[in-house]
Amino acid sequence: MAKLTPMTEADHKIVSSAVAAAEAQSAGEIVTIVTPRSDSYRDVALVLSALVAFLALAVVDMFAGFYLHMIERILGLWAFEWTPRAVLGLALAVVTLKFGGMYLLMRYTPLGLSLTPRRVRNARVRERALTCFRVGAESRTSGRTGVLIYLSLAEHRAEIIADAAIASKVSAETWGVTMKAMLDPLRQGRMAEGMAAAVVEVGKVLAEHFPRADDDVNELPDRLIEV
Image (tube, rainbow, N blue to C red):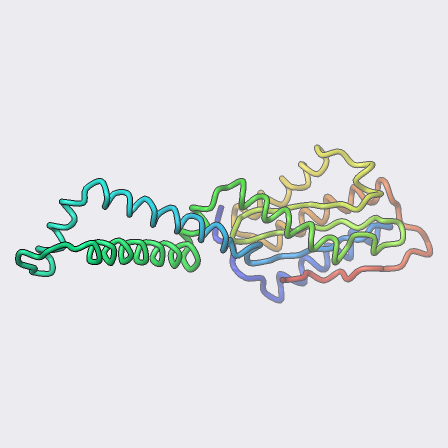
């Protein structure tokens, strides 16, 4: 997938216009949200850092003689006596350096996200999308016809979540078509066009099952939300 850059004002207009046009044909409400990242994955960083520190300590234990001799040569030590306290200090130094180094890599470089298991990333994106849906769309329309289109940039993952009235009538395959319409432009780095394409497909679904009534009012904002 191409690199996705921050949304510009023009991008916001593209998505917002698509939402307004789609809602003009139905009684449904479409909420669009883009976020740079769905989770900090701090717990994953801690677990992997602890694992790396433990493995490093195990390797030092297995090849203790080699590492002790290497340290003596590096530090220029002559006939150094490795007391229990000195060995313990070395072990603590190894654990601290390995844990700290791995934690920094996991938290502050792209490597951290790539080392996070895909199922964990997918679950966190879904969880964040559900939270945004509950706050911004669920049960906030009179007919429970809200739909959230959620895009998480760092994870390169999108979610579509529908309120109860829509979910009961629309199959998963239908949302799959909508997702494909969004992902094709996203893979080319055209984020606004991808979001707008998804909005168009959602609009078709809403227009089919929930056509706009004469007294329909706009219950949720049409603008693209960045969180």
